[in-house]
Image (cartoon, rainbow, N blue to C red; front, side):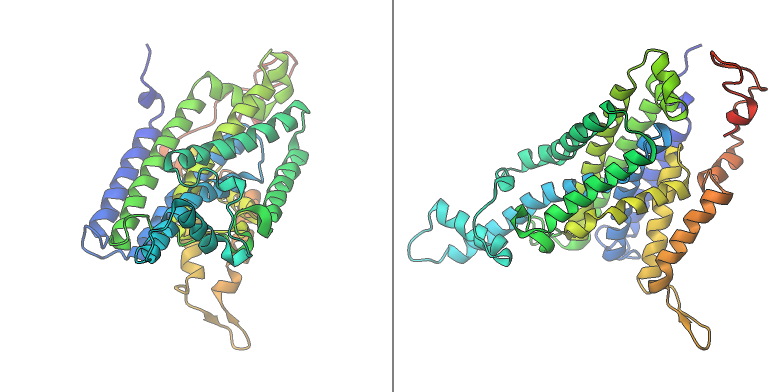
Length: 410
C-alpha cells in the first residue's frame, strides 16, 4: 500500500509544527507585536540561528548523506550575504545622496547621483567608481538572482573540476578549504570591489523603511528565516527519502560499488554540492541583514570548520540533528560570549567564558566524535525507538561479507 510522504517521514510534519509554534511564540513575546518579553536583539539572534540551521541542513545533505566533508560551505553563505548586501548598501546610500543634493541650486543629473553614491560607498578604500561586480546593484530582482546564481556557479565549477578528477576524502576537504581561503584573501583586497576588510555595513537599515523600528524589522526577518528553513528542510527531506537519497547514502557508504552498479556518481555529487551551495547562499542573504555587516572574516576557513562541528554535535545523517546542533551551539555560544555566563573564580585564576568558549566547543566536538558519534540526535533515536536495520549478518552484495550485521549498525 502506497503511503504519503509525511507518513513515511514523520519527523517532517513534527519539525514544521515545532518551527511554526516557535515562530508564533517569538512573535507573541517580541517587542514589535507582542508583550515585549523577548528583546529585539535576542529576536535577531533567534532569526540568525534559523539561518544557521538552514546552512547546517545543507551541509548535512553534503556530508551526512553523501559523504563529502566540505570545509568551504560558509564561503557560499558569505557570498549570499555579499550579493544582497550590495543592493541594500546601494539603495540606502542612494537615498542619502538624493536627500543631500535635493536642495542644490541646480537639480543633479543621474550621473552625478551615481558618482555621489560611488564616493560614499568606496571612499573608505580610496575610490569612487563602481567595479564590475556592482553592475546589478541597483536592481533587487537581479541581486536576488545573484544570491543563488553566484554560489551555485562557484560550486558548479569547483565541483565539476574536483569530482571529474575523482578527488575524494581528505584531499577533497583540503581543496574546499583552499577554495574558501583563496576567496577570503581575495575579498580582503581593496580592489576586489567589495570594500576589502571594511566589508558591507549598515545592512540592517532597509531602504525605504527608515521610519520602521528595528523591533518590527527583526520580526519580519524571523518570519522569512523560518519560512526558508521550513522549505529547505522539506526539500532536503524529500530528496533523501526517495531513490535519489538511497543513491546518496550508497555513495557515502561505498562509492565504488555505486559506480559499479551504473550510477553517475560524479553527477549525483555535483548536483548535491551545487544545490546545497545555493541553499547556503539563501541562508546568508537572510543572515547578514540581521547581523548588519558582512566582511571577508565571515568567509574565513574557520567558519566552515565551526559548521562541521555543529552538524557533528547535532548528529550527521539526520536532518533534525543538523538543526539541533546549529541551534544548540549558536544559542550556547551567544550565552557564553555575550557575557551572560558567570565567571568562575579559582583563586589564582578566573575562568572567563568569553576566552574559554572555543576550547569548550573543541572539547565537545572531540567528545562527541569519540563517545557519541550519533550526536545529540542520537538521543532522539532513543526516545522514538529508532533502530538500525537488523540484517542478521546477511551478505547483501556481489562479494561475500559486503554488508554484515556490524556494518548495518553503524
